[in-house]
Length: 68
Image (cartoon, rainbow, N blue to C red; front, side):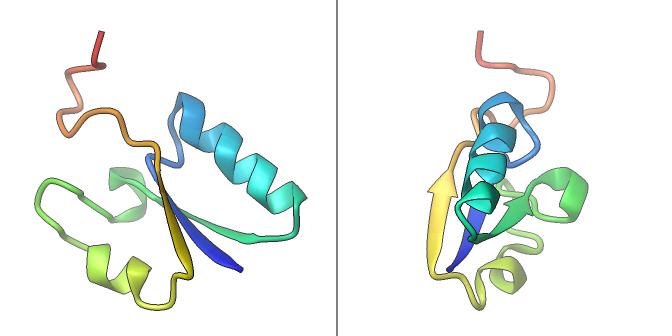
């Protein structure tokens, strides 16, 4: 299964990506560093084009705000 993980390079998201990969899924990281910006929508359509599932782990749209 192709699963897109928003915030997939963050604290929680990276663990989700690893767990999904361990279970044999194709875990796709969606983050600013991979060209996907949730605030502007840039790159979003492309990464979601063939997704079966989306797991949303992004915690902030502002890089300077860790949500704490």
